Image (cartoon, rainbow, N blue to C red; front, side, top):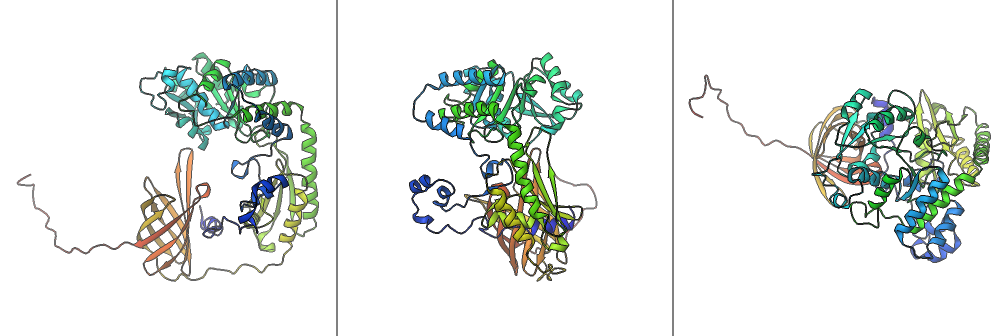
Length: 537
């Protein structure tokens, strides 16, 4: 990362508490039942939470998708009646098989839960004596899962939670050599590399089938295909999120594939006791998921695409009236996150604002709008994803973008304010997390306003970069592991030999830090170096 990238990221650091908007007037005494009756955003405003217009996509952290009316109706009806859950699972499995053409179906508590249950199924084979011992796999025959490196990702925590050993491979030869009597499963994330190329699903599944090793595909954000493209290519199981393209229950997943594996996966799921008891899926989600799949087979997908494009056209026309602003419509062909997007770009030196700054501004102020933002090749941009936009959102978005982009701004001041002093050296740091404190340290080198060095956490030492202007410090470090990455962004002030402030950790929210300059105790004594080997030990 160069200095420009570093300061760009650090300039977007939220202030302490900056993630929270002011409370909606009256929210402290608002009646939830009255807000529920009113419908819409009032339900959230009643507890002081301001809703968001979703121009970003089916990210779980902003709600995923809007459930279809058929789904809500099915869930409401299911909530009024009791049912035996194993009988429900069998009926659901049969109906999902009829709808999708798969051998069997299962509803899980989200895609990741489905991945976990299938992994358990491959480890236990449906044997409850093994099931109740997971994640302690001592004495198990199947304890390993093979993953091509391109498929390693944060969601494979669902597999790691089972206690299996993950074996990462970079080639077909490595995969062949990795398969053994201990191999429980091969896991792939659906993406370009899994569809074509030397380590595609088709290639891998042929090798796996010859060795009687199941292959599971994570297709969480994909459109559902009937007949299923992944099962046709040789996968034994494919799993989808219920709360993304399908617009089903947000807390449900769709698992399709071999009946024997899915029955073992259901055994590993709640309400059955064992490692999956914490992944409860209710009768409401089960029936809602079936309704979502039924609706998927009847939806006017071409009509939806046309409507999404019309919204982008409305926004594009208004942006086209602003001098120097360009718009580009992107129509993705791949199955994952398949929805039209609009990229709106401009020269940041002319409009004196960047796409990242607009995305941050819109996300924190009313009317709240979640959209993408970035800068590339001298141009900055915002991106609008249509899949979860609702009727009328296009006007709200275009009006706010027009107002923001046509606003007169003075250019940002050239250069940076002089540093108030030197922060070079070794700093002992205490980090206050929600329910614990951690002893960490910083080693900082300083070149004017620019800072670099290292941040030592409890488990790793990572590169540190940042800036100092006046007494204000902004720094960033990233703890990068295979399939995981935690970024610490420090925002604080320095006075004398103490730094204090907040740490923004993205999805992991915030922490506080206090760092004090390390002082070495002086111990001055002459050192005698022996002139020969020791005479005693």
